[in-house]
Structures are given as C-alpha cells and as structure tokens.
Amino acid sequence: MRAARRVVVALAVLVGTAVPPLGARPLAAQPRVAADRYDDTFRKASKRSFGPGFDWRLFKAQGMAESNLDPAARSRVGARGLMQLMPSTYREVASDNVDLTMIDSPELNIEAGIAYDRVLWQRWARDSVGDDRHLFMFASYNAGRGTLLSAQRRARAQRLDPRRWRNIETIAAGVPRWRHGETLEYVRRIAANLERLDDRGRVVAGTATARGLRR
Image 1: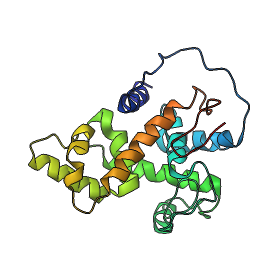
Image 2: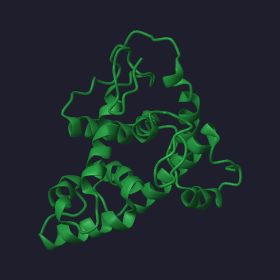
Image 3: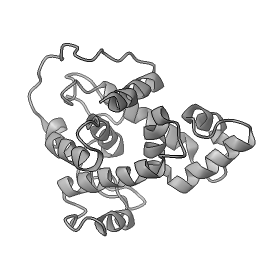
C-alpha cells in the first residue's frame, strides 16, 4: 500500500495538486454512469497484473487519456479499443494470456492494456527511480521503451540522472525522432485524470478530463 501511495503522490506532484490524506472522507457518492461502467474490469485486471496493493485507478486514468473510455475508439495509425492497443501489441500480450482472444472486447482490451503495463513496469525496475517508475511505464506505453532508452542516453550524456523523470523532461526536445510533446502531455493527462477520480474511482460530477469526458 505504501508503494501505491507513493505513485499517487508522485502523479499529484506532476500536476501540482494536493493529495488527500489516507482515510480522508470520500466525496459524495455519484450514480454509476458510462464513465464508471468498466471499473470492475479495471479493478480486477489491476489486481491480476499488479497485486491487490496497487491503485487500480491509475489504469482507469490511463484509459481516459487513451480513448476517453470509448471501447470503439480507433486511431489513425491503427490502435484499437479502450486502451488503444496496436494489433501487434495485443498479439504479443495475448501470446502469454490465452484468454485474450478479441481485441475489440472492452474487457479484454483493458486486460491486455494492463498486462502490457505490467511488462513495461517490470522492464523499468532497474532503469528508473522507484517513485518515477510508473511515469516511465506510461511514457513507454505511449512512445515505446526504445525511445525512452534513447532519452536516457541523452540525459546521461548531459550528466543528468537518467532514472529521474524530471531529467527526461528536461532533455526531451533534443531526442531525435521522438514526438516528445505528445508523450509528456500524455503522462500529465493521466495525472490530471487521476485527480478527477474520487477514492472509489468514480469520475467526480461536473469534471471534464483532458479528452472531454464529463459527468
């Protein structure tokens, strides 16, 4: 639980907002609407891939940034579904998860997206500072791990600690063939979306996400 708490705090710092203390009184309950219809899937998939102590709301916030929680979303480059997975990535994840049969199933798309997050999470275990590990995970989900490794090499060349996300932000503009603005904004959107969720993971009434979701 402490590790999960550090992740939430780090994301809050990224957007310059305060985090309520543990045990804070929850926001007024809101009725379940479309924005919350996949909460059970996010919760179960997070537990399966990351264990019960990880904050599943992070992945809902990611889904909000990816597709505005639209299971029918399609990108111009071919990414599909709520978690905007490329078919090749889905097949890669599905090769180790035989139950992942249909990329266009909202539930399976969420399962695969979080399973892929887990793969990235494990790969950043040694190449990031603990509190920044989730930021590298989300950034490489968006831009690819190879791109982030290139950014780390540039940071190292400038005598900056490549394991710290703030240093990656500092040198990002100098990394060749990286649409860094998109990736940095993607990470910030996830942080902002997390702030729009109450302690039960429900979108707070009247808030809009960076992609327009409103309740």
